[in-house]
Amino acid sequence: MVKRTARRLTIILLCSLVFAGEGAACSCAWGGPFLKVAPEAPLIVRGRVTRHDRTPAPAMAVFVLETLKGALLDSGLVVQMGDGMHCRPPVEMFPPGTEWILALNGPGSKPGRGLALSHCGEYWLRVEGGEAVGAVEEGPPAVKRIPLEDLRRRIKYPKFREEFSGRAKRGKRYGRSFGPGFTFSLEPTPTGWEIAVSEIGRDENLARLTPPLHFVPNPREIEGWQFLADPSRCPERPYGAEAGPGLVREFVFSPEVGKTIGGEVTPEDVEAIRRFGRGTLTIRGFTLQGEAPCPAVEEMEFTVSIEGGGI
Image (cartoon, rainbow, N blue to C red; front, side, top):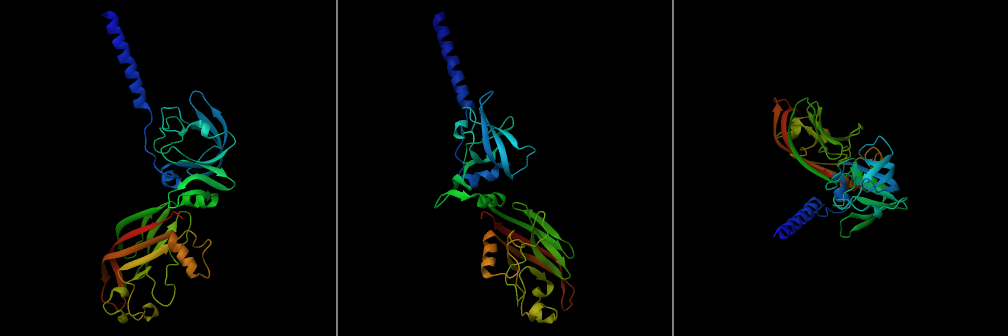
């Protein structure tokens, strides 16, 4: 009886250890290809694997050639890899001497000490001959290779879509950050505001090439005369326009404005800008100041829908 009881206790103990190990092991669904999951990672680097370490846990040493997202103080990294318990790929997949794009500390990697590489999605791409190779993007057709320059741009400007509401008062600037380092603003003018989009570190209005560019009032310009029942009362209205752009203002923007796009602007340039970024400001309410022939907008309520990136 004593031996039988001891045997049962031993079996129960072994089973508990097995199930405890299973409970601690990684279990996660595949989150998707690189350009879908990489934006969740706080650090993305291009680096060369220099060696593998096995103790105290599997890891690889990486010499950083380029930082694509985040910041580093050193060019050397140690990346924690799969040990059967955490959601990380095996170190054998990354031979010494090979070059990779690595999105580190993504969801599921359970980084613990230092940095780790998750296998709960395609958080890595191999670099071959100026291209990144792997599950880059979903299709159809699925993208398996992408030039490094295109990948850099896609990492810097991932897809975004936002909507917000606001209130602007005469003579005051309104600003709201959105997407990867952009700001939407209403810049005050004598009788209203100008719609602007800027990027951190630059003074350029990235929306300034919103069409139409000539001969009629531009939708970026919000002025009091545009809301008059009879706009002809205002002799200062541009182009002698019969009406303003209305309550819904569409605009386009791109970080290439002032860089590769500027000067003589072609329809193809405008379409390239539109492909990158599009926005709509809808005026929900407004108050005009006084009965002057060309009144100013005293106050305005609005909503903004804005999207772009990913190209």
